[in-house]
Structures are given as C-alpha cells and as structure tokens.
Length: 81
Length: 147
Image 1 (cartoon, rainbow over the protein chains, first blue to last red):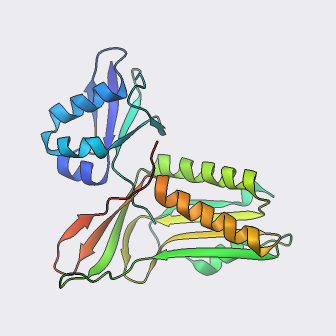
Image 2 (cartoon, each protein chain N blue to C red):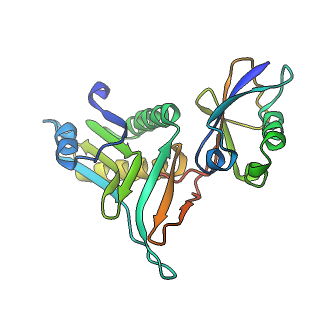
Image 3 (cartoon, chains in turn yellow, blue):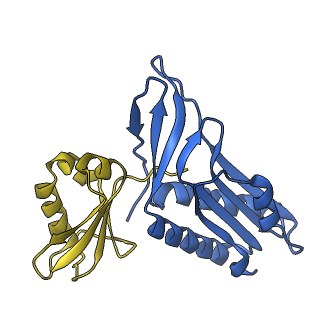
C-alpha cells in the first residue's frame, strides 16, 4: 500500500523532502512507517524518537494501523506562540 | 454564543489587534480578554534574535484550533473567540499569535484566553525558527504534550 508522507520544520529541512509517497506492507503501523522513514532519510534518524505522528490530521499512536492512501505527517515538537 | 462568528486561522499578513477586538465584541459580553505573543530579542552569547520564521501544517493546525475553540465553549459561556497565528517571518516586537475571548464577565474571559494560548502552544502543529543577528538560524523545540 501507498501512504503520503509529509514532513515539517527541522525534519523537512534535514531530509530535503516536504512530501512524498512511501510504500509499506498492508497493515503496517505508524511505528513501522517511521522505521522506513529512518531508513530512507538517514539525516533525520536521531530526531525520530522525539517525533510525533499524525494520520489524516489527527495525532496517532505508534501502534495505529495505516491504510492505503492515508496521509502520515511527522511532527517534530511543536513550538508555536 | 454563535460559533459561526468565531475568527480562527493562520495568516501570513500582520495581525490586526483592532480588527480582532471588533470581531470579539458583541452586545452580550462585558469583557474581552486579549493575549498577544510577540517576538523577543532574547540576546545570548553576542547575538540576538532578529525575527522568527513560522511554519505550520496548516490543515491540521486550523482543525486543532477549531477543536480547541469548541472545547473552550464547553467549559465556559463564551460569546466570541478570535484565535489567529502568523506564518512566515515575524520581526522582533511584532505579534505572532493573537487570542481574544469575550464573555459576560472578566474572570471567565481571562480563564478561557489562558486555556487557549496554553493549548495552542502545546499542541497545534506550528513551528518557529529563530533568525539570529549573526545570520545563523535554529529551530525551536517545544515542550508540549503531543498525543
């Protein structure tokens, strides 16, 4: 299945990627997707332990199962205000 | 009382305090509390901040801000909510976030305004990068609870 990956702020800058598709096994979880991101973008590996995930605009836990066509956003610690 | 009259969102143009007060005003309220977060110089080690650059996951941030407004309305009797956040460059001294809440009496206006700014800072998908006088820049890592 294919998931739309979006990256922001320090993750976007370090990886050089704003959005891209990633190919995952059916039923892959957020945690599995993040491992795949770590493999594809070595420059962000050290940030991933402090990175939250959102699926289709809502924060999601590592165990959340992804579905084909989902939008997975990687969210570094927010710093608005 | 009318949620449709709330003004909530991200904008790349300067925040207009007068317009926000106008949007928060209505005949049922006796109080409007306003919070402005502004860019500070933050001098350290021979350099200082010239500006902040804000980036957002816009669709999610606006959805979160609307949910926070709904949550505030469940807790307090609120007439109007204005919740605006800048994206792009915000120079020192300029506001990056504006919250205005109108309620019948002042105590609830202060409480609701405080609630909203605290939750915006902790949860909403917005990031800032400090632009320093020595031409360096650095992303600010927040301490919010994201879940």
